[in-house]
Image 1 (tube, rainbow, N blue to C red):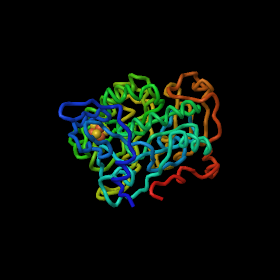
Image 2: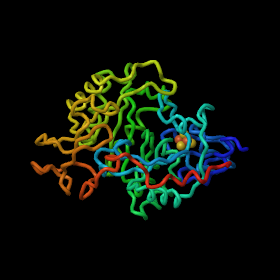
Image 3: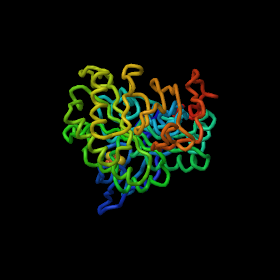
Length: 376
Ligand code: SF4
C-alpha cells in the first residue's frame, strides 16, 4: 500500500504559479512564503515540490467534502441560507497549534493526522455539489492558496454549472496568486489571526503578507469577510484587537468582522475557552473602530444581538440568527433595509429561499466522492 507521501507525490500536475530559476531551482508564488526550492525538495507546505526544475502541485483528489450552511464558513453577507459544498486537499503553509482542521491541514507534518485522499475530477465534484443542493462551492479545510491550480479547475466547472465560488483561507497570499484567482473567485474569507507579527511567526507566517492580501482582495472587489478566532492570552488584548479593527475599518467600515470563540483543540489546550464576555468586548472594540457589521460566533444564544445583522442607519433588525440558523430575514430583493432604504453591502439573492438547515439537514443523497478513495 502506498504511503500518504507517495499518494501526494503521485497525484500532481505542473504548477502555474512559479518561475524557473538557474540550476533547476524554482520559485513558487502560490503563498506569501514565495519559496525558492532546489531540485528534489518540497516547499514549506510540503505538497508542492520541485522535480528536475519543474514545480509539481496537488491535483485530482480531495481530503474531504461536506455540504453545510454558508453561515458556517462563515459568510453572513453572501447568499444567506445557501448550502455551501466544501472541499479541501491536504497541507498548509502555516502550522497553527489550535488548528480545527488539522487532520487535513497537517496531514503531511503530523502522523496522527491520518486521512485517506479521495480521487475525483473537477466535473465529479461539481456534480456532487449539485446533487446535494449546493449553490456555493468552497475550497477550504486545507489552505486553498497552496492548491490554487486545483481549485481553479474546479471553479471553472462550477461557474459553468451556475455555482458561486469561495475561498476560506489564512490570507497568506501574493499579488501573483490573487490575480490568478480573481476571475474565478466570488467570495473570500480571511482568518486574520492576530495583529502582531511575533504571533504570526509562532504560527509559521508573517503579518504583512496577510494584510496585503486583505487590502488587495478589497480593492479587487471580491466579496470579503474577516474572521478572528479570539484566544485568551494570545490575541485578546484591547490594544491588539483595536489595531486590528482599525486596520479593517480603514479599508472599509463595510467589511464584516467575525470574532469567534476558541475552544481547546489540537496542540493548544492551555488557554481557557473564550468566554462570551471576551467576545462581546472584542465586538465592542470593532464597533468603536468604526466597523458596521461585527459578529460574535461559536457561542449561539450567548452574545446578545451580536449574531444578527442590523441596519447601520436606522438599527432595524434585518437578519436574525441563532448560530448558523437564520430565524428572521427582512432585506428587500435589492439588499436594502425595508425601513429606511439603506443599501446593505453583500451579495444578496433576489429573494430569501428558506434555509435548508431550518429543518434537520439531510442531503438529498450522500456524497458520491467517497467512491473514489485512493488505495482502495
Ligand atoms: S505554496 Fe507557499 S509554502 Fe508551498 S511551495 Fe509555494 S510558496 Fe512555498
